[in-house]
Amino acid sequence: MAYSEILADRIRKALAHLPNIEEKKMFGSLAFIVNGKMCLTAGPQRIMCRIDPTLHELQLKKDGCTKVVMGGREYRGYIHINEQSLEKEKDFEHWIKLALEYNIQLTKN
Image 1 (cartoon, one colour):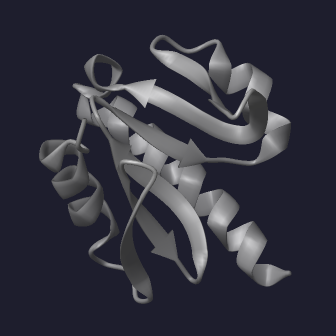
Image 2 (spheres, helix red, strand yellow):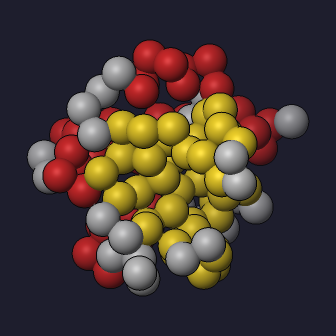
């Protein structure tokens, strides 16, 4: 299944004020790469956020969140959030903010 164009557009608009944004199709999703680091993806009926791994367990407790598992391996610091849990703008903005905050940490190193 292809990624959600609606979610991709929402992410694109949320990142429009930033320089150095690249979009790349990968793993059936559209990845948004900020400052050379994968930050967010739009997938089918969900987004994936790359967040500070120290926040992983706490953020998984939020409605609509699941661990990212690929090839049987859990990726700490990567969380899927289903589309229904992103309907309210404040909820969507929460995930964008967490992903961008972690991206700043990654690019400082």
